[in-house]
Amino acid sequence: MDVIQESDNQEELRVNFFPELFLQRRIWILNILRKENITKVLDVGCGEGQLLATLCRPAPWLTPPPSEILSPFSSPTSSNPNEPVPPSPTYNDDDVPNLHMREVHGLDISSEDLAFAVEGTAPVEEAVEAESPGYRSYTSGVQRWEDMLAKVWKGGLEVINNEFVDFECIVSTEVIEHLPSNIFPAFTPMLLGVYHPKFLLVTTPSYTFNARFTSPDAPKSARNGYPDPTGRTDRIFRHSDHKFEWTREEFTTWCEEAAKEWGYEVEETSIGRALNADPWGRDDELQGASSVATFRRLHIMDNKTREERGRAKIHELALAGQPHEALVVHEHHAHPASMKPRPLEEIAACVKAKMEEYREAFMRVEELWYEKEIAILCGGWIEMLVRAIEQSPDLNLKPDAEGIGRRSTNWSVELIGGVASPSQLWPAEGEMSVDYIPPDWTPGEGPYESWDDSDFGESTGAEGDVSADTSDADGDDESDGGTSVGWGKRPRGWKPLVNEEAGAKPKSGWAGIGSWGDHESAWDDVPQSSMSSAAGWDGDESGDTTT
Image (cartoon, rainbow, N blue to C red):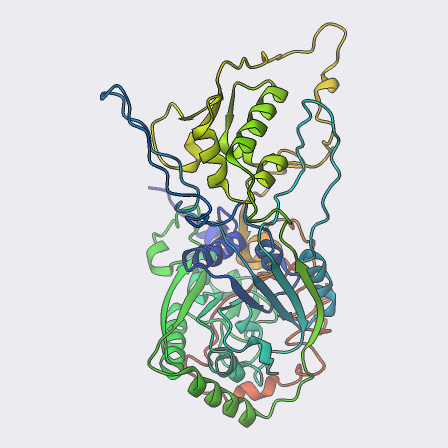
């Protein structure tokens, strides 16, 4: 057994996560959206819009076509009873279904952050590809087969926006712990009352997990962080802007009270277990770094009652605020060929021509699908491609050698009589390896470029959200520790924009100086209960490495 030296107990412990904590939160959200087949989402506290940008990505193909478009397929029987004919592959009933978003909204108060959200939700311009025999693009995007609307709003949580009423799903990640004392009481009346979505997804830091950053007998001085700014507790928080951090028990109590008051059921848990085991065996006790909850609307209360009660409570709070401003409305249009498939024979002929052009005897079904011409001929239905291959005398649909299955990743297409071009591992005489670089490859880009595994996934309590230092549109704009990726080091709008100098005051954001920032003294009037206890989480302050 390892011996923990006493001197080690005076320092904060490093905690590793894989995937990074902000990604684990996003995966949790996306999994629920997929499972529940959500098509309309509002991200409250969207920050720079990373979740919005993810939701704006089109599904690779449509849901299955109706029977009048493609009749059910009857599998042929094999002449050899010992060699059963494998079933056709399916592409819309996998364990991880595709999202088919039709409407995405984001709300935040920071103009600086929202500028990124506006850009990230814009339709992608179609790239002009080179036309030459055998050319295969490595950058062409997925076609969009369904119309979608993306709308980015600037405004505060305390102001009612009638467009959000009866929304299908509202997401609030790493936001609630940043709300000023006068805005916090409006959170559940607004979201569960006035807007009463079918689903509300909430994440917030778990103060219980903070013990993981120090040894059990470590003095308070070993914990790097920020003292409770309200003075109500002696807790050390992960971020300077946190108004509270809830323990797992306090979060559970708050969830149950909110669900009961507004006619919801709630399922709460935690995510973000440390990659490395705790030397003192506390992992089961401390659970995950983020507390998460799924509120599901019940029929025990009608929506009209919820909305009326919510509006009444918001009116009682008498919160001043400007009406929400729609900064942009992006219309993402479906491809003109969507749901207009060509005959199966034409699709099969295009598949054969592509395989001959590339001199490939075998290609995966998905690889062929991402050939633009083929997907367009199919009208966005991958089932049309499968059927065309099955009925073609020139093509053979077969499972991979690992075994027969219906999973979409296990199927390839054989060009009957086709001969693949031999693989040339080394440049021919007179050639250079540079001649084999794809024409659309850009140095410094791609999955194997600019990889830096220094301090991979590491974090300490001082680093904050103990994961990647990146801002999430889903509210994960605080530091997760580690290095900043993707969206740069920028504070998010629902949290204060803090100068690097010690003691600098917030400039803007949900707790910033301005329309609602100077109300910290009001926290003294909040009773010590689940509504006020200081325990929770940093969030994802983009670029701030202290949470």
